[in-house]
Amino acid sequence: RKEVEQDPGPFNVPEGATVAFNCTYSNSASQSFFWYRQDCRKEPKLLMSVYSSGNEDGRFTAQLNRASQYISLLIRDSKLSDSATYLCVVIRMDSSYKLIFGSGTRLLVRP
Amino acid sequence: DVKVTQSSRYLVKRTGEKVFLECVQDMDHENMFWYRQDPGLGLRLIYFSYDVKMKEKGDIPEGYSVSREKKERFSLILESASTNQTSMYLCASSSPGQGAYEQYFGPGTRLTVT
Image (cartoon, rainbow over all chains, first blue to last red; front, side, top):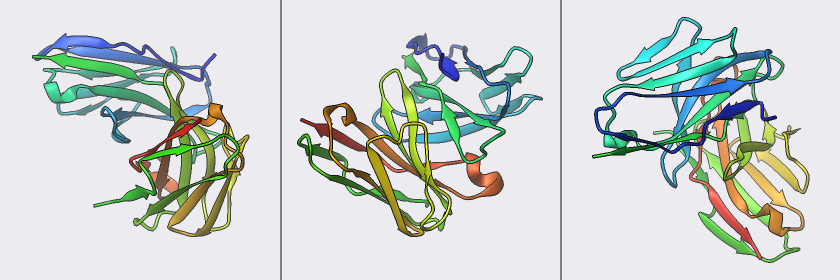
């Protein structure tokens, strides 16, 4: 079983829609959580951190549920430019340098 | 603007060849990483380094080695390339401590081994 699991998608939504992705992690020693974004044929870039209390950045909201071991990303009012692959990332308590990446959820926003 | 550069965007090598992938960062970061990215498998860590001349195995180090002689440069070496090493290779760097979670990636090298 992968340590970090994501639905690969694609999620195909119209502009203006609200879309949510979940990501589950299996290691309860996981300490920190993030979402990275990877555009087609580009490198991954940090999108936002995920805190226990939730984290909002404009149209993006990230939440953590430690009891159920999942994190979520909600995108409101989707834009064409949001089309990308969203990578769920976990850092384990035993190794702060190592990021564990999920394989990503692909989002396509159509006009 | 932060920059991580990789020596080649595309590379085609033959089975058995020795392959060098170079990565250079201009952010004075202590930590550097090599990943490979394959469809459905995500990014998998090959090796990382948290200081000059230091290296640590990641999750899939077999068939690879690394070299870090200078802080800004981290090289990945495929001692004898095989077809199952055909992949996208991504280099990343980060600062230590609280900054370690934000890794800056290079554009990647798509390696094909024939």
